[in-house]
Image 1 (cartoon, rainbow, N blue to C red):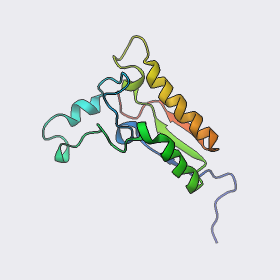
Image 2 (image 1 turned 90 degrees about the vertical axis):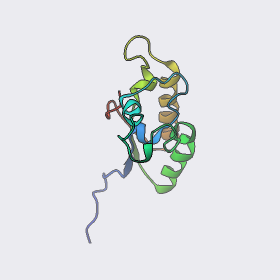
Image 3 (image 1 turned 30 degrees about the vertical axis):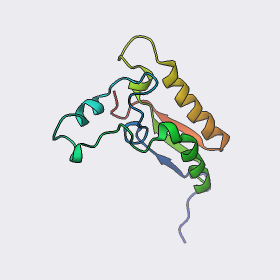
Length: 122
C-alpha cells in the first residue's frame, strides 16, 4: 500500500479574488480582476467576485470546516487592493486586520497559514 511520508502536510489553497468577496468594504480598492469582470462580454454570465464565497465574512466558519477536515495548512493569497487600495501610499489597516484575524483563527485551529503575496490580484 502506498502511503505519504509522516511529514507530509495536507492543506487547501484559495485565491483572494475567487473566495473573499466584499469588494467594496472596509476600504478595499478596485483590482485588475474587478475591472476585467465588469467589462461586458469578458466573463460568462457577467459574474464577478463581488460576493464570491463570502470568505471575508465567513472565514471563521471556513476555518472550522478546514479543521473538521483535518487540514494542517491553508495557502491563501493577499488581495493587494484590500491592503493598499490606491496601489501606493498608506496601507489600509482594516485590510491588514482581516489577514491578521484569518491567520490567528487558523493558528487557533492548529492550521499553518501560508500567505501568497501575489496571485494575479493587483
